[in-house]
Image 1 (spheres, helix red, strand yellow):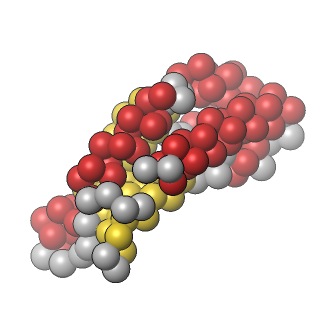
Image 2 (cartoon, one colour):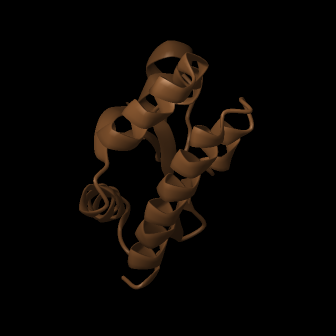
Length: 122
């Protein structure tokens, strides 16, 4: 991504919101590692994104899916640029034979793929 780091986080959050995801958590990995270990690390944030209707459907199908929620999105500096990565929701469907989870994972994946396409166009 050709945006400055802070702007990449902002645009990622906006793209998630456009697809119905809210950011429930934001973990500043660089600051945490510095505070806890005194270690220097590149700028790296983990965003915990949740789409409430999809999360509700997934939890109704299998409560253990909560172990994989929210969907993690990372934004990190990388040799002169910024990389955004998003977990594949298909991981959720692999936890259970419940067919509802496959449907939820497919819907979530479609939304998250649109997020990636939106960010790639910036």
